[in-house]
Image (cartoon, rainbow over the protein chains, first blue to last red):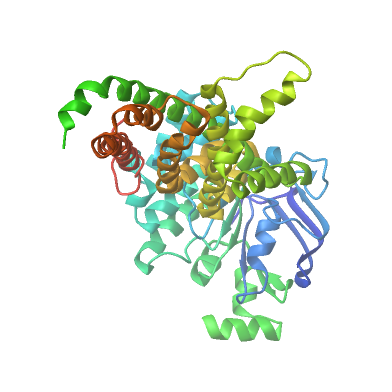
Length: 249
Length: 227
């Protein structure tokens, strides 16, 4: 992709370690992600991909190391994490739409509650976003009435309603029936084309190859290898990468 | 069988008793729901002190019979206060205090169960949007927890309503107390207590109808909402 701004570091991760009890899940991650960049994180299950992503908006606390988002060190306890999170959208594997609200309320809730928009502005924005993900007719449906693919598109719209400048995707298509994967990936492709900074943990190698500016291959809690999709898929250097790709491609 | 006699002679008393039962129940349930929420949030706090207070409260209330609590509130505490200042407590006040403290302890645990039943992803999604812990609780977790809690809540409401009859022992002029007075002079035990039983059944049936309605109303999944 073309619109990467190398002068603006959106995410800078230095020597990130994460323990769950005594198990070290992340064993020292360094990564810099620039404005407008689309980074896909691939790797076998248990390699720490999701944990890494969840550390970036502090859903998991880093055990050691620093994570700087938009210039804010979120490992610093004095930083108001809620403010930082307003600029980081997140999309989950299980969608996590608020079950007690209809689609419209799901999207409007955060901007209104956090006083980013009035009710009218939020509703207008929500309808625009629903239009964009092709679900304007579902505004008054409840999450339980939607298919997985529809729910995930709403979840993307909900994250976008806060006008984030970074979007995190945690295996957004892994819980979907195969025929619904495409509709979600299409929305994500569109978002990438518009220049959104995106970090995507995924098993969709086709998506990574087509859309990513850079692919990170993780195993055993570290980034084993990274490069453009051409480099990583076309000519992987690390034996672990070669082994993994030979199994999934 | 002489129901007509009971209807003629006892009904006026029993209606008075029913009113007391209803008022004491409703007020106690309302106060108990607030106490319960407070205690529940304290028990789920990450700080030790509120957690300990909530734990001790639930432990004492659940660990002692309500009749004993009522005696302590009605007879014991006024004596204690009278050491310092003239003080009287009427049976209604004592009854409401006892019942709401009691309901509060059980409701706290019911809420806690409901909160724990809300999938973790719901609060993660809210936090990821920038909502604070408190906002996440009020807007996302508690509404869903409340829905999960309804069957147990109704159960507790029913217990609280029926427990008002225990308060006859401190002289609360509720249905059973009134009935006792009436049969004491007339000996029409069977008919009078049958009428009392039907009255309880009626109140609780109304409660069940209301709760079924609310439960249907809150069943958002698979239901279109007009707005």
